Length: 348
Image (cartoon, rainbow, N blue to C red; front, side, top):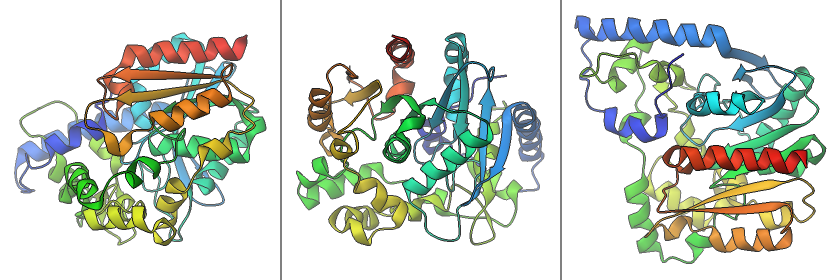
């Protein structure tokens, strides 16, 4: 199985390469190549489970007798993101289970609003169905907040926690330290491409909108994110952005200024207070805290330091210097080393 292209860091560069023209054979050839790889990967590791909230897609690799790692991806990514690390993680004796939560990968967006705590319930449902009593719970960005929601609700089911730039600090605190104009400029830099809000009548058209026709290799990752949305049309995570209040700069600003009025998936993330959630922490935790110049709007180091001080024996606060938000992809070996450290702490 080939390594999967990192969705979050690449789709911005791919958009715009392909002008939608379904008569061109090059698009069809690329689509068929990608579909073949996608179906091969999914037939090997892809599964679905009907929870109380959604028909959830997940991937599973490794031996069921190994220590389970349940991975929760970041916003706009998918369960496939963990495949970048699968060989190293499996060599540690981990069974890897990675989920797609609402609107991500092949999991649809529920018609009714749900919170990150509903996703925690979905994960517990999955664990029970697989007869997993305890697992390492890990996540990146919003996935980290979902991991924290899981611990908040089901602490007895957690062996340890791996939080990559999310879930260990209140997301609003650094934003409240900035004035609105400065935050607006930051959000302008971080806003999603408008192309990701566009939907299409067919899966093939949606694929063409993202495909890089100058690169004649499989782009199965695109198909991993394509699904029929709430509007009945095909799109790439197109339902996600409104649900997390990220469809525009104004929606992002409004979610910060009035989080209780934001969509539930957004507000439940912003309003989480990890210093309260983890007041009675009883399992090992690794906090991966990327630090880079100018990233004041996501400066979680002060809150992370407070949490570390509350549980110095259980928590490792790992600062990754000169690193952006996608820390585990930018520093893969450090991430793997810290996962090894977490396993050592669990076993000791």
